[in-house]
Length: 352
Image (tube, rainbow, N blue to C red):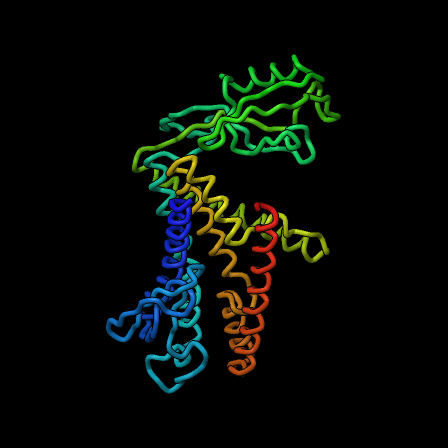
């Protein structure tokens, strides 16, 4: 448990520091003073000052921040103030955090392609090296016999050489209570299930999708190119999923069950840690992309919300009242914290 907590905090540190470092570096490059660069939320535990910037480690390790001079509209007459810079430079500083999350994903994806990442063997490209091949459950159908029996996506089927052998075993045992051995992390589980005829299938099923998976690696030159392509594809995929969730939320459908807060991410981290370093790396990549996409949404208190006010400023030809903007961002932040509290509470109920 202690090692999982350390891994969880390390993942948060990597994601937060990358995002905030983007804001920090571009702000400094554009002549804007950064008053504080902090990991976690106050109160402070440790801090030190270098140049004009104070660096701090804070008590609540669930985020981070950069305190940019003039970000709240103060110091418009100061040459090193965010508020005194043209809209284009301010936009660069705001977007830099999101871009850094995407760059981090590309770097880690490229590195992962060199050392080997988990993937479906049939989808491996030419030049790939494959090791640790196994038959793995890639999905479990809701309300299926498999879900009721406790099967989970990621479970490794023990004792089967290929997909056909497993499917043949299921077909031979229609209506019978069978035991299937699976590896889940470091655990070996014996799960009992009864194959049933499905309306969408020509034979008995238990409600899982399976594939031969393995750790797939590539040559260095190919890994970098593939890292860029894979990251872009993941960005588009996650945007599509996020768009669908937002659409469902507007229609009044519940989307809470697919959202995860710190507790949910901790649980996923524990599962990834049990499966190996490449799975942890994969998790960091996914979280980095998700963090970037969430932050660019045009919602108050997020980077996208600040960009929205810059766009309004350009359209109007003058800034929105700083007092009004600050109030809206404060309300947005409060709503985000309330949402986080609700998601965290649901995670606690679901997992514990």
